[in-house]
Length: 258
Image 1 (cartoon, rainbow, N blue to C red):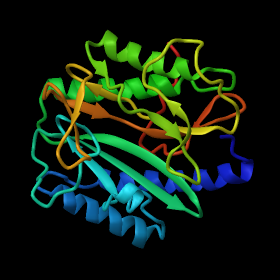
Image 2 (image 1 turned 90 degrees about the horizontal axis):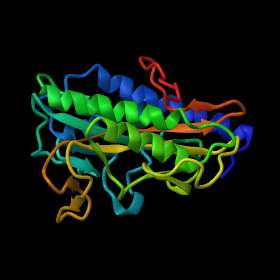
Image 3 (image 1 turned 30 degrees about the vertical axis):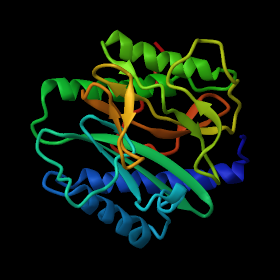
Image 4 (image 1 turned 135 degrees about the horizontal axis):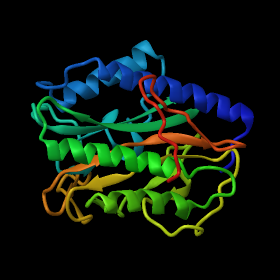
């Protein structure tokens, strides 16, 4: 689970490249595009502009470079030429990238046009929940500290946290140890050590935390049909705290531990 300084340098490079994918997407008007068009844009950017590999493509038999999860879709939404991103949507784009043998993983929920105040609020809560979790990361902290901080923030704001999916270690493989749950008790779970790299990726629902998987075997939706939002970063445990390897240039880390 612990990466060497040389491995961390390579993971840092992969993280910077993945951040640039989201920076490219930030400059686009996604409304009116199909989710498959977004997938293909990202595919070309990663392979052509960045000379990297979309790590999700071919993983577990998945055919695409990203998951595109709109509105009540919690995660693993499959790109589709008939699914058009519309004004008022919220849409999570979950993207992975491999460069020189090491993988980075990140996601962002985009607010499209005139989304409702309730939808915008949910997106803010999900993003803040991620940062609440990341703020716990430092040597000697426990995995339960991360999950507790995430779920506490969501519950305080009247939302729920999906328990069926979680963060994970990452490096040469997409999914490594440890599992990073989005709920937990402080002072429990594995102890964090300098050099560990993993994702923090809460999925926050407006309503119940229960989910269902659609007939395609991939798409996970909220059981009650209400909205869901997610944010994700790949982080490394440093000697003094945490480094966000997929941090985008327009982001300000919110690392207060309160």
